[in-house]
Image (tube, rainbow, N blue to C red; front, side, top):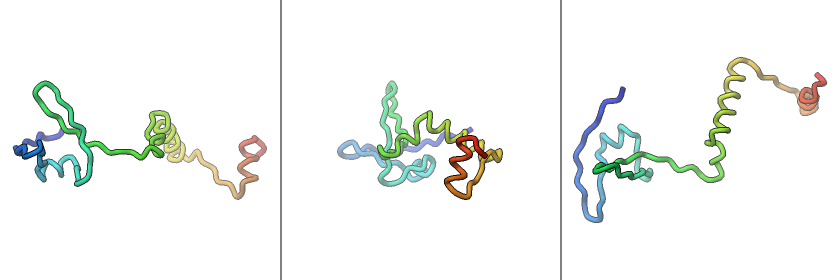
Length: 97
């Protein structure tokens, strides 16, 4: 269970707000990071966000992450096999081992 952290900060010129150091540390926000700004009722909610390069977005799909978990489980259970060369690999894939 996390403990709520409350802090007071002032809105400055151009609507800028400084996140207090304790708040930044609590949510691991660093200079240059992005935050999502959402309004719920009369509350403004800031949520830290990380941007993912488009060329790497596939890795974070539900399907890819499921396959990563499956592969990790196979490795942990010892369901892996090494090959001396490509020919051995191909023979194994073709069921000739």
